[in-house]
Length: 452
Image (cartoon, rainbow, N blue to C red; front, side, top):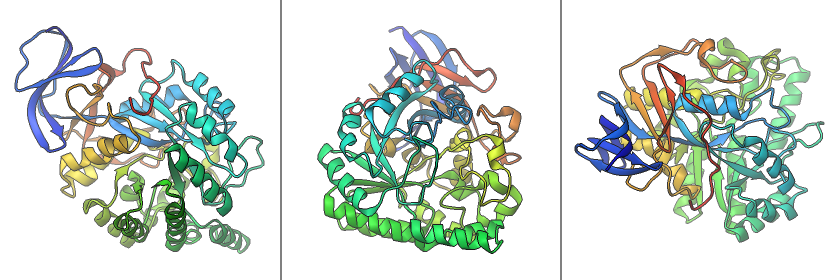
């Protein structure tokens, strides 16, 4: 057979371990896996000394196009993903304008995304109090899941996203359960966090430590408990996003043991940084929930290493640099991180803490692809999409502003040394990033469809 691409001599990561085999790619699919492939190919990649693994499936990315494209667009955001080893992503219903809360807004986003993505992409629909009658039209329009906020979102910008109250969450869960969809929830008690924030600002307590104290652990746990209670009542499939505390993970583990259909993600920044680092890094590391103190971070690491976190996401939430100025309460709450998902966590989890590399692949690729019903993604196996990354565990580099592909080149990881590097990213058999060449070719990303 004449292959489009052969990857040779790499340490290929399967779900049951690592084997040195060759991979043959034909018509965007993995067509052959063998000890040695002797056929010819249009392109041959020598992966000697590197891990060959499925590309990351990042189910938590904010691209602000249309409406706030100056924050991040599909082109720049997907370039950063390609450079970081992400081959598929699912885009949140905010921070674009209008928010994706009806079919009309979804169509605007679908149109804006065409021929701009270097990796494959899909979309969320938002659940807000006023759109309970719009959920089905978004589901029929192809959204892969729904998202709501239990934390406070206040905006005076027309078309912006808003948080749910208990009634709209309950009714929304009923409708999403009928559709067979998943509801993903940002879980923080909105009343306590809002009032604590107001109190601290009023008293002039605006340090990094004060910000962390304004969103204490129990506010996350409380919201997780309420979401699970509603899921039990409605039968809705539930996913808790960017969970930052062991206490909340334990609540989710107990719910799983009781038969609740619930999964949980966390993010690299909760493992790479902690609250004690926040004063030095500053607003670039502001996020919600906040970075936790080192002692709590260690407990979160235990949850990850014990297999109690289902997958990792970036929660890439960029903005213009001016919005990261001022005190930490005033600054935009989001971290630009999608370019450093894979290498950073491989360094921290696999190299430094001994996580098995096949478990790492479950965290970045297999588990999210299964939950989001993307059967052709997330695994190196014959007939799957040839979404493949090469990771060199022996390369080191320092994160520099000039190397970032974001529209706004700032990151909480600037100046950090990472002892691992993504050297090549392949989307459906097409090389889209090469460490020496940078971004390769034109955008080839396709829209993701559930079940395909």
